[in-house]
Length: 170
Image 1 (cartoon, rainbow, N blue to C red):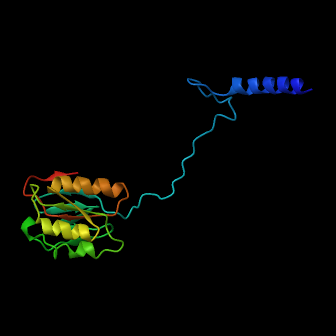
Image 2 (spheres, one colour):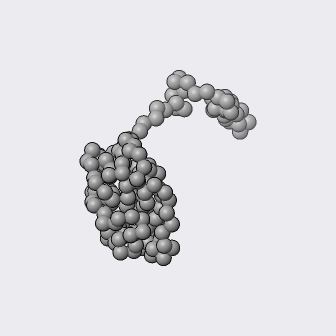
């Protein structure tokens, strides 16, 4: 009796093993229990209200269809004039606006004009202590970095000083 049960189990087990996929096995629609369609559900659609930097010039920026003259602060859903004349005016006080945001930004991208300029290390250290990572770049690269991080869904802000170079439309 036990031998017959083992033989029957062996036959059923062999049938299952023959249907199981092996390395190199290609699934086909006839493999009902092995073939499934992939479904994608969008949990959070992209926010149409987030800012996108379209272009820059020596006079200012084109952001989400709006022209902004002079240095500006680009926040997740707002664009403001930023009261700095050059990268030398960037201080802990001039960055206060970015520290007061709620929810707080993860990354602050600073565009310092035509060239990457070194900010005072104490300013960067104070911003890190507030939980904000600061990325200092020339303005063209800062615009691209802001757009990239923004489309990734990160909480990002930018402080941008127009470059003195040629106009570029994104």
